[in-house]
Structure formats: C-alpha cells, structure tokens
Length: 67
Image (cartoon, rainbow, N blue to C red; front, side, top):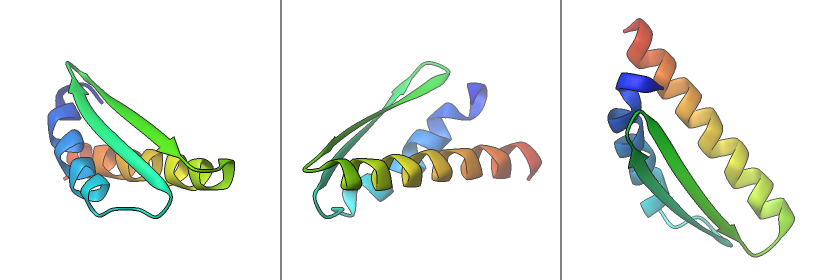
C-alpha cells in the first residue's frame, strides 16, 4: 500500500463506521501500512468482514495507483 495507506485507511474507516452486523472493525493507519482489527460474534461473520475489508483495500489501492 505504501504511499496510499493514509487514503486507504480513511476510505476503510468510513466502511467501518457503518455498523456491520455481528462485527466491530477498527482501521488504523500505521506508516505505510493499514492495520485492520476485526472482532466478530462468529467465524462466518469474521470471514465475511475480512474478505470485504481486504477486497476494498485492494480495490482502493488499485484505483489510487492507476487513477
């Protein structure tokens, strides 16, 4: 993520604030990385949130890299 990490973290923070069911998410910019903390009520919710946030981060990084 590198130079894009602050922008990606900001975008993911908006998603984390939306209040996902059965999941609490924290997004923390950490230098050139983004730390995503997920706490879920069950494994299925954890997996869904993890897939969503990693997918959104990957997509945002691609958009920022390629305009």
